[in-house]
Image (cartoon, rainbow, N blue to C red):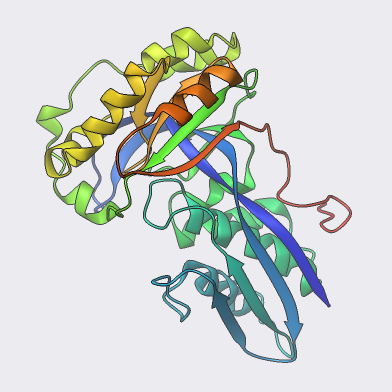
Length: 297
């Protein structure tokens, strides 16, 4: 038995850091939004073992990969015996880019194995497992747009606003999330918390105001170490983006547009050595793959 599906990327429309927690993580508020850039995943039932193949050099295919961790955690938590899986991963979302590619893959594997192994686990219980894998993973089991709190795993689904266009620019190098947080100086990132304003802009589908309010408390840390990020931001702003921001901990920069043609023109006019990832209308996604494959209680 095989199942195939796609897992989307995400951007952070706002990211506010409140402070460091006793457990070593940071208390934050963020707005996650799924975008229509996808990785392709195929799961094939095996009698035993967990195997991973990936088409992208540099992406680990052992137990350090988040999708393997997801499969191992599910197998251990529900004492799955006599069933294994072969996972084939085709990466279109850049690795270490702040777009949640690995987190989305892991969430998709949890969902897919729930079906493939016929476990019938409720979505809420899968989300708890997802939180053990990483702060961003539960989002991909929630909704296309969500408010993230705590370390990002406490989620409240938000109504997606009208579709808008996103131009992603990946500079060609990854940024380690752990490094960014280790070098975060909170006294330099104190500012008004605009999450509530962003939520209002989303509810009104006010793309112009949304663009003007984009912010990310991690951005100054990344720009100081990687000035190329500021160059990309300036270029996108000069080409008509309503707002420009580093996604998550980087290194991808995105610009938002309220018109598909403006986004296409901006992409075509970009100069430099950056990898142009995609210009695409953001999709208001409800599932990773067809509903007739996954049936949740």
